[in-house]
Image (cartoon, rainbow over all chains, first blue to last red; front, side):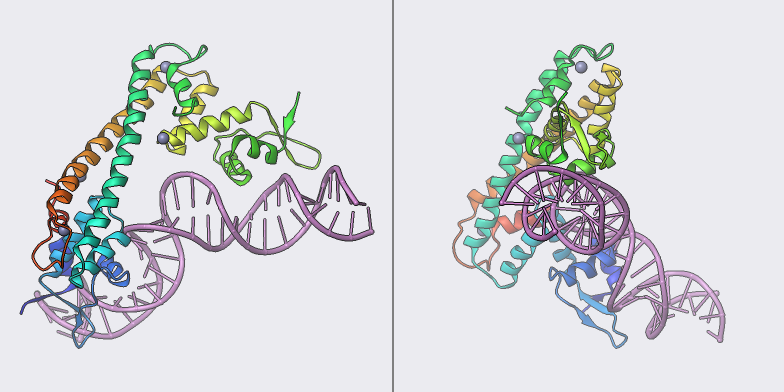
Length: 135
Length: 135
DNA sequence: CTTGACCCTAAAGTCAGCTTAAAGGTTATG
DNA sequence: CATAACCTTTAAGCTGACTTTAGGGTCAAG
Ligand SMILES: [Zn+2]
Ligand SMILES: [Zn+2]
Ligand SMILES: [Zn+2]
Ligand SMILES: [Zn+2]
């Protein structure tokens, strides 16, 4: 069975060697086998695991959350737990969208109202909008 | 004219004394007058300035961006610059909303698809969705 | 006059998620 | 067999926006 050095794994996965070691320390990647010279040797599916981590990060999961998901996969754990974690993440994402949408609404409105010319003697609607509470 | 100690200002603004000193070091708050004993004494409108900072932070502006906005106000600067800064912020906020919306769409879809029962032997749609690239 | 609540500064610690550096061992190539 | 390109570890540095700590000075109350 073919194995990869940490450098090869880094190249294939697009994750830096030091980051891979960091994930190992943080228990996201299992400690791999070693050669006689104490070099790490990874199985090919380590690439998939790293890509799962990369993608999950892009989805907005923290390393703590990703570790939870990986533990469930490794242990062949309960789907209900996975669904619960994902459900909480969805809830957080929806709240973020709501918050940003409120800000977007006010900011675009005031940007239209602001003439964008001259000095700021008498209140600029943008500055005034920021000075006030969100609602 | 009434002035405030840093503690009184902290209480009125809801910003911790140490954070106020930090803002002074970072040139967001101007250095106030001092008593003989070297205690800071703030004018009443320092409260407004701190609240502007607080609200701008809530709007998603970084301290660097807020400093820019405050400099423009202090210097009675160009409205076009304010509008430019706010326009860039609006653009970033819209991109964040787009990104989060894509994630929301996929995540809610897969949450519906997942039965949420039993072990994860054969692929759970949530895990599979995370394992894949965004699109 | 002494306690406690305030104030001062400078420096270090915090969080996440790494990156960079330091100091060395191993292996492939010329 | 020398040199470069790997690999190893531990430790320190980075970002942003503070908070906490350490070691003092000052001021009002009892
Ligand atoms: Zn809000
Ligand atoms: Zn304006
Ligand atoms: Zn994306
Ligand atoms: Zn599932």
